[in-house]
Length: 154
Image 1 (spheres, rainbow, N blue to C red):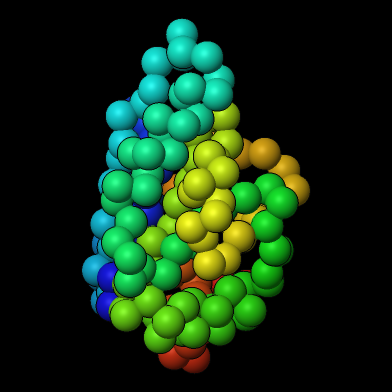
Image 2 (cartoon, rainbow, N blue to C red):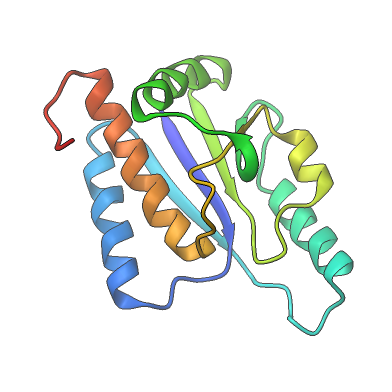
């Protein structure tokens, strides 16, 4: 089983990188986890052009057989139990590989949204795409713990 997270931009804050790395390490008991950081599109580009280029870069990292989940403010909100159940189903549907896509500051290109099999909303609040990575890996870790009836704080 493999989880891939595709997102633009690099994590610059050491504390945030340490948190993400800690959950990726914890996840290694359950699955392989890869975070693929894409180069940011220059802020000087027009928004539409930037969105299209970012979308092209994201789609180049998603294989035809991958189960693709995009993080989207207009997506479906799940509690941790439902998220855990969905992950198990997504692994079955995606040939043991799930790709989570986190958009940049402009959101996600329509082509990326169209490619997704599921749109997930972590919260109605807006988070930076760097912070979203930490929240996502923590929730994936929690999902595996739930699936295996292992203790984890509530």
